[in-house]
Image (tube, rainbow, N blue to C red):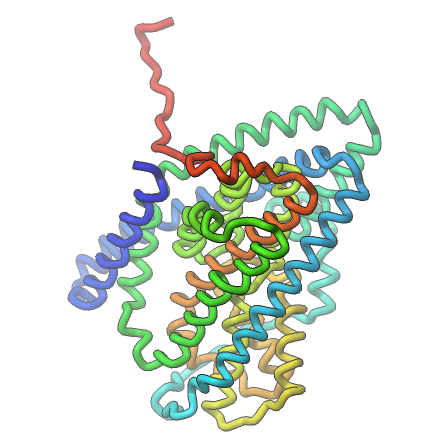
Length: 432
């Protein structure tokens, strides 16, 4: 049984287990203390930490190998411009689709505000957009590496790799060392993924034990529209871009993306999923490391298609709830703000609410309205992260195809890069 099948089985088991606990054992202190807040919490947190542990060294050394593998600074700039343009295009299409669908479905028209608004709400603090751009350049690269600030890490690593190329043969030993460390890190990814089914089970069980499927019922209109647009964007808009710009089969692509999408869903973090996404586009889909190592971390930081969809639907929903007419100029402002806010926003759980506060302030909607959607945001965060990761891979494939750095032999091979159960080497003391 391959790892993807195992993860699907354990994910379903976690969902069922968590839902049953939420329904039957909410007041059972033994189950809550020893399982939900004990076993599930510890196992899930350890698994998330294992993934996060891989991100900085993997991105750093993989990016050095990628930039040095490209070799041509002009080509590097070309790849970066293509990726950035496609990320902005997909985000613009995502939020435009969200607003179009939400305006026609009109969630929140008959919402009872008195029953839905919680007693207390703290407005998330939104950083000024100027500070976001200033923070692209690290004042201390060691601090950026320690804190996992992805855009700063990407900036410094690209600058470092370009400098390695510029000094010529003297930089070759360092490049070879980075390539060896990158190989080791990819093997560490394989080892960590062997524990994935159990980590995913723990994460799903804890989430649904605390949240419960029944939580979405009062917000079914908003929840349904967001999920519907997310699915349409992932299986429609992005697949059309992949088909017409990348000349690649969407069916084969989606089949090979399942593992990365499951990881993104269970962790609700684009950054934590970077190791799995990198492995998927390189080993399963045949993208050259030089292209994948540059675009995937870049996309995990600035590509927020799923978050943009949530913002578009939430804007229409809150406007309907409060009876505020935004108008075409307001919606264009929402589109522009969402695209800009996605640049430099960390790929971590819950960041969408901070971005949403920025958007609401800009168009004059009451920020307190965010409290209405906070209850179901965790579940939606899981789904939209899977969409974000799908968008990262789509752009990587399109750019790789345009740069002739995509192996169609690997992509067309159903078994390419399949990860079976990882067996750690066994040491027999009786053998020399």
